[in-house]
Image 1 (spheres, rainbow, N blue to C red):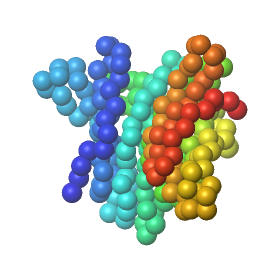
Image 2 (cartoon, rainbow, N blue to C red; image 1 turned 45 degrees about the horizontal axis):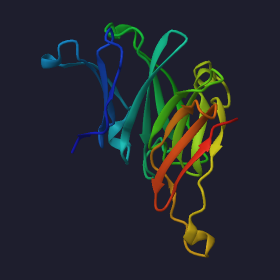
Image 3 (cartoon, rainbow, N blue to C red; image 1 turned 90 degrees about the horizontal axis):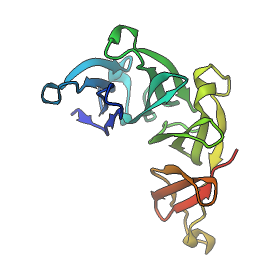
Image 4 (cartoon, rainbow, N blue to C red; image 1 turned 45 degrees about the vertical axis):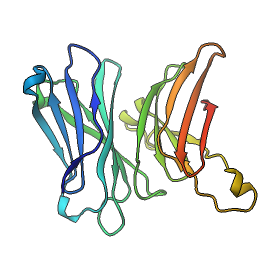
Amino acid sequence: MIRTADIELEQELARPFAYVPMLGTPPAVHFISLKDPQKAKVVKTWWMENPELHRGLGGLSPTYLKTHGRYYVVTAIQFQQGGPDVNLAAVVTDVTSLPDTTKVKEVRRFQVPDAPGGFHDVFPYKHSDGRVIMFATSRGGGRMYDLDKFIAGDANQGYIGTVPVPVPPDAQAGGTMRAGYHDFYVAYDPANHRDVFYGPGTGETSSSSPVTG
């Protein structure tokens, strides 16, 4: 069965586009024109190669961003053991040319061999120091990447570091740690002049902390 998995809408009136990934097989992301909301139409679809071999959720949590005058869509990817591409975590696509689909192109793919299973959620944020930082849920906490460096081909994928997962009370008392980030939000705190990460999570984790690095 194929089901939609999240949706992202561009916010500029001149760019009435939506991005909708599909759970299951075949893994795909639909690029949809909403120029006429009553006649929305798929103008392009990204398909994963060899879809019948993959296991897991596939594509989810799309998000778009603009940097250096170009528009990009980042789609989180999650594949399970037992199939290919378990290290694939996200796909970045340049969608600047829309509605002209002939120039829409895949730019690069995030790979996380140290944390198989990919990213469950991604969130790009324009840091107060000017960097476009992408936060991603993965094993070991919230990962941070400099997207401009990633797009430029940085060998380390623009990796900055991680936002650690706080230790829940039961783990401190000798219980089992069952926590991890599920989603997050990052925003500038003008009162205290800092960038703040807000991280709700599974199990018993939730936190907020300044973003540095």
